Length: 297
Image (cartoon, rainbow, N blue to C red; front, side):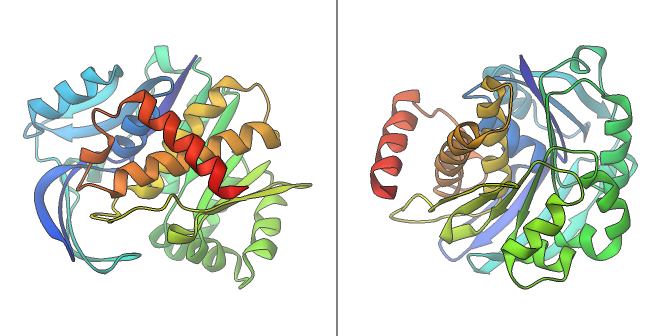
């Protein structure tokens, strides 16, 4: 079994209250794939330019992430530059789409019979394109962002009708449903077809909402946050990797996914870029799980 991750791949320049980095590896597909790689086999689908660092490719291979869905085309890699004045919101200073502007996901034959699929927060048209090529996945999830919610809500609704799991943060689900109460908002999304809505709540953790059940989990407490970029993607990647082990979405599988998603998001925000997702000792992950379960009793 394996997880296919489709999303953006880029080079980020990030500034936060505790420091900054330039041209560090980033993008929704990167964060999700690295996070998921600790729990399952991962195949990444995306596009980069000729300037994409060889060291980044080596890193993905080191994490046993299959690259047959990664296209390297003439031009420059997608770039994003942002600054965090507050931890829960980045101000975008510059976005250079470059080769990502013409990205058309190509799902390799070997990825069409995988177990799970995570659609990162790319344009809903691209998410729909991928869904049209893949019919056999047991677990299919989508992520999104306010940019797509405000510009193409009808297209996003088409995506949501075709997936099993929807990841949104509090602001996103409120914007999409026009409901202030996230539980009312989640019920609206569930009525569109998905079996599960996971509402990401940043420093307050997350809540998973199904038709007949829900489960809350707090954020993992950290001594210091350095960079929140990619936290939601890291969460979603680990969550989808964990439910690879379950044939159905029930409360037990969802709880396991939330626990490991929370742990990997915490590792991510503790360092800049993807550094918090590199070289994690599996025993440390399991100890964090023990701690998190103990604290939530």
